[in-house]
Image (cartoon, rainbow, N blue to C red; front, side, top):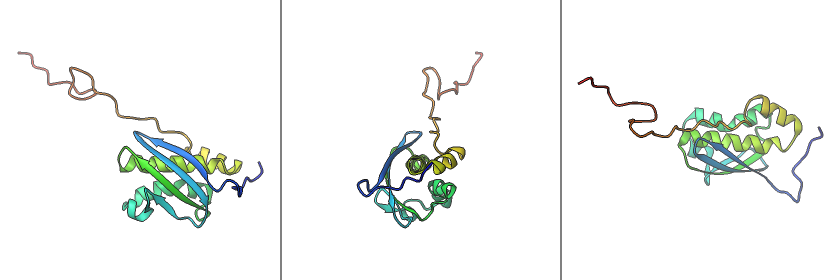
Length: 137
């Protein structure tokens, strides 16, 4: 498939990523590889290297590490879920740029939304599945 560069009329690509209860709105623009999440640089927003690696994984898979700038807004969930949501959004945005990139990102499993969420609590139980201690007498 032919490469589709971001046209001058369209200055960015927008995508939404989700993970658990976190939702990330991601915009990628041609640039130098600067990643901004909630108006903070990536290093300031995430101090853990593992979460930084989760966010930048779509770029590593697609070999476009310093080709795009990312501006993301994320809310809901915890740190890990937010990192996963941002990565999902970046992967979806990268998939629209080029067909070859889409196949790489899809094979890596980054386009699939991780639908695992916390199970709801049932009445009569302490948590979703934990029952109170059984007493014979």
